[in-house]
Length: 169
Picture 1: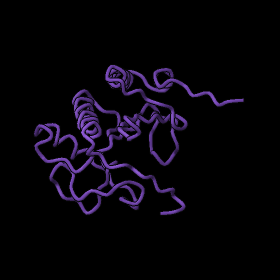
Picture 2: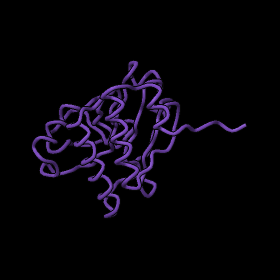
Picture 3: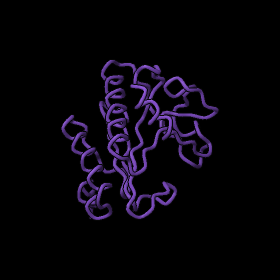
Picture 4: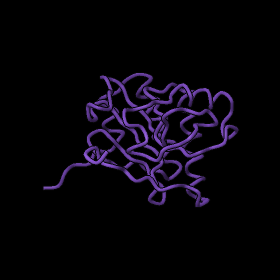
Protein backbone atom coordinates (compact mmCIF):
# COMPACT_ATOMS: atom_id res chain seq x y z
CA UNK A 1 0.00 0.00 0.00
CA UNK A 2 1.42 3.41 -0.93
CA UNK A 3 1.47 6.44 1.33
CA UNK A 4 -0.94 9.23 0.58
CA UNK A 5 0.87 12.44 -0.33
CA UNK A 6 -1.67 15.16 0.37
CA UNK A 7 -1.93 18.42 -1.50
CA UNK A 8 -0.69 21.33 0.55
CA UNK A 9 -3.91 23.32 0.08
CA UNK A 10 -5.96 20.47 1.57
CA UNK A 11 -3.82 20.28 4.71
CA UNK A 12 -3.64 24.09 5.01
CA UNK A 13 -7.44 24.22 5.04
CA UNK A 14 -7.45 21.69 7.89
CA UNK A 15 -4.80 23.22 10.17
CA UNK A 16 -4.88 26.98 9.44
CA UNK A 17 -7.56 29.65 9.60
CA UNK A 18 -8.04 33.39 9.14
CA UNK A 19 -5.07 35.45 7.94
CA UNK A 20 -2.68 32.52 8.31
CA UNK A 21 -4.76 30.46 5.87
CA UNK A 22 -5.24 33.36 3.43
CA UNK A 23 -1.53 34.17 3.42
CA UNK A 24 -0.51 30.53 3.01
CA UNK A 25 -2.90 30.00 0.11
CA UNK A 26 -1.69 33.27 -1.49
CA UNK A 27 1.93 32.12 -1.31
CA UNK A 28 1.11 28.63 -2.61
CA UNK A 29 -0.87 30.14 -5.53
CA UNK A 30 2.10 32.41 -6.33
CA UNK A 31 4.40 29.37 -6.43
CA UNK A 32 2.05 27.40 -8.68
CA UNK A 33 1.59 30.39 -11.03
CA UNK A 34 5.38 30.44 -11.40
CA UNK A 35 5.59 26.69 -12.07
CA UNK A 36 7.14 26.03 -8.67
CA UNK A 37 4.94 23.28 -7.32
CA UNK A 38 5.18 22.26 -3.68
CA UNK A 39 5.94 18.55 -3.42
CA UNK A 40 5.16 16.56 -0.31
CA UNK A 41 8.36 15.84 1.61
CA UNK A 42 7.24 14.62 5.05
CA UNK A 43 4.23 14.97 7.33
CA UNK A 44 2.94 18.54 6.77
CA UNK A 45 6.17 19.54 4.97
CA UNK A 46 6.46 20.42 1.29
CA UNK A 47 9.62 21.13 -0.67
CA UNK A 48 9.73 23.50 -3.62
CA UNK A 49 12.49 22.86 -6.16
CA UNK A 50 13.66 24.17 -9.50
CA UNK A 51 15.95 22.08 -11.70
CA UNK A 52 16.79 19.80 -8.75
CA UNK A 53 17.81 22.76 -6.55
CA UNK A 54 15.94 23.55 -3.34
CA UNK A 55 13.99 26.83 -3.47
CA UNK A 56 12.09 26.67 -0.18
CA UNK A 57 10.28 24.51 2.32
CA UNK A 58 6.76 25.15 3.55
CA UNK A 59 5.80 23.62 6.87
CA UNK A 60 2.35 23.51 8.42
CA UNK A 61 1.36 22.75 11.99
CA UNK A 62 1.69 19.01 12.50
CA UNK A 63 5.19 18.84 11.00
CA UNK A 64 7.89 17.21 13.13
CA UNK A 65 7.96 18.66 16.63
CA UNK A 66 11.49 20.08 16.28
CA UNK A 67 10.12 22.64 13.78
CA UNK A 68 8.40 24.25 16.77
CA UNK A 69 5.10 25.05 15.06
CA UNK A 70 2.16 25.65 17.37
CA UNK A 71 -1.48 25.01 16.45
CA UNK A 72 -2.52 27.36 13.65
CA UNK A 73 1.07 28.15 12.59
CA UNK A 74 2.99 27.60 9.38
CA UNK A 75 6.34 28.73 8.01
CA UNK A 76 8.32 29.38 4.85
CA UNK A 77 12.04 28.57 4.83
CA UNK A 78 13.53 29.97 1.62
CA UNK A 79 17.01 28.95 0.54
CA UNK A 80 19.26 31.95 0.08
CA UNK A 81 22.74 32.59 -1.26
CA UNK A 82 25.46 35.16 -0.70
CA UNK A 83 23.33 37.93 -2.19
CA UNK A 84 24.44 41.53 -2.32
CA UNK A 85 22.73 43.88 0.15
CA UNK A 86 21.06 45.77 -2.72
CA UNK A 87 19.43 42.56 -3.99
CA UNK A 88 16.45 43.54 -1.83
CA UNK A 89 14.76 46.84 -1.06
CA UNK A 90 15.58 48.33 2.34
CA UNK A 91 12.17 47.23 3.64
CA UNK A 92 12.57 43.62 2.44
CA UNK A 93 16.15 43.43 3.73
CA UNK A 94 14.92 44.56 7.17
CA UNK A 95 12.15 41.93 7.03
CA UNK A 96 14.66 39.23 6.06
CA UNK A 97 17.04 40.23 8.86
CA UNK A 98 14.16 40.27 11.38
CA UNK A 99 13.34 36.68 10.37
CA UNK A 100 16.90 35.33 10.48
CA UNK A 101 17.07 32.26 12.71
CA UNK A 102 20.02 30.34 14.13
CA UNK A 103 19.61 26.72 15.00
CA UNK A 104 21.96 24.65 17.11
CA UNK A 105 24.79 23.41 14.94
CA UNK A 106 24.05 26.11 12.35
CA UNK A 107 25.99 25.52 9.16
CA UNK A 108 26.20 21.78 9.70
CA UNK A 109 23.08 20.70 7.80
CA UNK A 110 23.11 23.40 5.12
CA UNK A 111 25.61 25.49 3.21
CA UNK A 112 27.12 28.10 5.56
CA UNK A 113 27.04 31.80 4.62
CA UNK A 114 29.36 34.59 5.70
CA UNK A 115 26.63 37.22 5.51
CA UNK A 116 22.91 37.59 4.96
CA UNK A 117 22.28 40.50 2.59
CA UNK A 118 25.48 42.19 3.72
CA UNK A 119 25.02 41.71 7.47
CA UNK A 120 27.62 39.45 9.09
CA UNK A 121 26.51 36.86 11.63
CA UNK A 122 28.49 34.41 13.72
CA UNK A 123 26.26 31.67 12.35
CA UNK A 124 24.21 31.75 9.17
CA UNK A 125 23.35 29.30 6.44
CA UNK A 126 21.33 29.03 3.25
CA UNK A 127 18.25 28.23 5.35
CA UNK A 128 18.76 31.06 7.86
CA UNK A 129 15.56 32.94 7.02
CA UNK A 130 12.33 31.50 8.39
CA UNK A 131 9.00 33.29 8.19
CA UNK A 132 6.57 32.00 10.84
CA UNK A 133 2.94 32.94 10.17
CA UNK A 134 4.09 35.62 7.71
CA UNK A 135 1.93 38.69 7.18
CA UNK A 136 1.41 40.28 3.75
CA UNK A 137 4.73 42.19 3.89
CA UNK A 138 6.67 39.08 4.88
CA UNK A 139 4.93 37.13 2.09
CA UNK A 140 6.07 39.79 -0.40
CA UNK A 141 9.63 39.44 0.94
CA UNK A 142 9.45 35.63 0.70
CA UNK A 143 8.30 35.94 -2.92
CA UNK A 144 11.30 38.17 -3.66
CA UNK A 145 13.63 35.62 -2.04
CA UNK A 146 12.07 32.88 -4.20
CA UNK A 147 12.70 35.04 -7.29
CA UNK A 148 16.32 35.63 -6.29
CA UNK A 149 16.88 31.90 -5.77
CA UNK A 150 15.11 30.96 -8.99
CA UNK A 151 17.21 33.45 -10.98
CA UNK A 152 20.37 32.17 -9.31
CA UNK A 153 19.42 28.64 -10.39
CA UNK A 154 18.46 29.75 -13.91
CA UNK A 155 21.78 31.58 -14.32
CA UNK A 156 23.78 28.55 -13.15
CA UNK A 157 25.02 30.36 -10.04
CA UNK A 158 23.23 28.35 -7.33
CA UNK A 159 25.19 26.08 -5.05
CA UNK A 160 23.79 22.60 -4.53
CA UNK A 161 22.44 21.94 -1.05
CA UNK A 162 23.75 18.76 0.54
CA UNK A 163 21.78 17.76 3.59
CA UNK A 164 23.74 16.17 6.44
CA UNK A 165 21.68 13.80 8.57
CA UNK A 166 21.41 14.55 12.31
CA UNK A 167 23.40 11.43 13.20
CA UNK A 168 26.33 12.65 11.05
CA UNK A 169 26.56 16.23 12.39
